[in-house]
View 1 (spheres, rainbow, N blue to C red):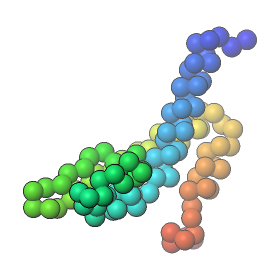
View 2: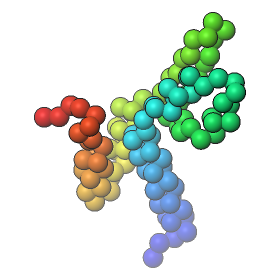
View 3: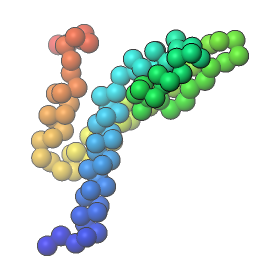
View 4: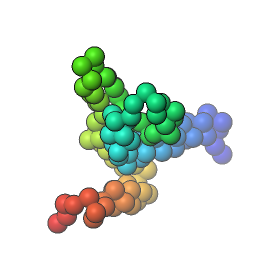
Length: 106
């Protein structure tokens, strides 16, 4: 019989896994869009996915800087958590990350 504490811990781990998976699959397309938005398009910011952004800076001279989540660390954390479960989800997830349209391959 599972205790309430165990169920809560399991729910927290599932939430963490979901967040890490989202970060691992995140693409920075919306950050590029943000860099080119002007003040008149400010309402469009709410629709952008900036979940993988750690820091944004627009300097006085107009340059734009962005720092992103380290995907290697995210994948390492995912691997560690999913290997503990040993249910095959890790392999399925990693297979799903590969998109032939992104190039690379064997």
